[in-house]
Amino acid sequence: MELSSGNGFDIHVPSRMPLSPGRNTDTPGKQPDRLGDRMRSLARFLNPWTSRSPISHYYAIPSCWLCPGKRIPFALYGRSAQGEPVKILPPHRMYVPSEDGHDRETGPSRVFIRKESAPDLLHYLDSNLDEIIDHPLMDAAGKAEVFYYLAYRRLEAVYRSPGRLMLTDVKQIIALMIEQIISHPETLRQVYDLVQKNAGRISEHPRSTILHALNVGILSTFFVTTVLSHLPREIAEEIALAYFFHNIGMMLLPRDVVNHRGDLDNRAWELIRQHPRWGVEIMGRRYPLTPEMGGIIGGHHERLDGTGYPGALTSANLHFFVKTCAVMDALHALISRRAYREPLPLVEALREVRHRVPRGYDPRIFSQIIRVFRAYGLF
Ligand SMILES: [Fe+2]
Image (cartoon, rainbow, N blue to C red; front, side):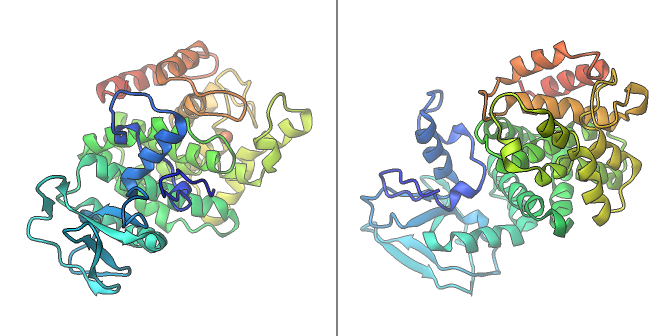
C-alpha cells in the first residue's frame, strides 16, 4: 500500500500489521473517519511527525522497547533544542537508558529512528519479546500492543508458508499469552480491545484469514484457560496451538473463492468444506496432533445437530474444546468485516449466535462465554 496521508506519513511499513486501538485518537469518544482513524491509530505504534517537522522522516518509539545493555541494530535519534534530529546512538552500539527512563511531560521517554530502520526495529522487537514485555515501564496497553502485533507477525509468517511450518515462534508467543492471561488480566483486557477493533478492519483474504485465526486463538485460549484453571500448562499450550491454526487449511483455497462476494456455487462450497481436513493434514505433517488438537482443526465447522461439515458429527462426538472453537469462530466471523458485509457490534453478534443455540452450538458453553466476558469487563 502506498497511500500518503498528506502530512508526510508513509504508511507502507505499518500497513503490514493489524491496527492499534482507537484510544490512540487525539479526541477520545469522537468517531473519526476510517482513513483518519487509521492514521492516528498507527501513529501510536510508529509515531511520525508532520511534514512541517524537520524530522518527519523519523518514527518515535518508547524507549522501553529498547533492552538495556544490548546492542541496537539501528541508529537512535533525539531532538535538539531547535527540534532538529540529533543522533544519540550509532547502529550496533549498546543501549544505556537514562536514569529513570521517563520524560517529565510525556511519561516513558521516546527516541526516534529513521523510517527505513522500521524492518530492523520489527525484527529487534520480535527477537527480544520476552524482555520487552517484562519491562517495568511498559504499561498494560503497551504490552498488549507489542504482544498482539508480534503474534500477528509470527502467525502470518507461518500461515503464508504452510508447507514449511515453523511452529517454535508461535509456541513461544502462546506460552507468553497464557502467562499474561493468568497473571495480568489487565493486559488481557487490552488485548481484547485490539481483537475487537481489528476484527472489523480487514476484509480481504489472506490477511483477514490470518487475523481471524489470531483473534479466535486469543478468545478461545482465554476462555478455556479461564474456565479450566486446573488445565496443565503443556496441555493448554497444545490446545491453544490448535486454536491458532484451526484455519490453516484455508490457505490452500483459491483467493477468489474466499474473497467472493455473493452466493457461492457448488464447486466453491465443495472446496470450502475441505479446509478443516486440509488443516489437519498440514498440521499433522509437522506436529504430533493429539485427538483434541485434530478435533479442533478438523471439527470447528461441525454443529451439534449434525448439519456442519466436513463430517456431519453430532454433539456427543464433539469435545468441549472443539465446541468452544466453533462458538468463537462464529462469534468472531460476525464481528469481522467481510467483502460482502459490515461487521456487527459484539452485543449484536452474541445475540445472533444465541439464535443458533442449542441446535448449532452448546448452550452451556455459550452461557459460560457470556459469564466470563462479563466478569472480565469485555462488554
Ligand atoms: Fe474454518
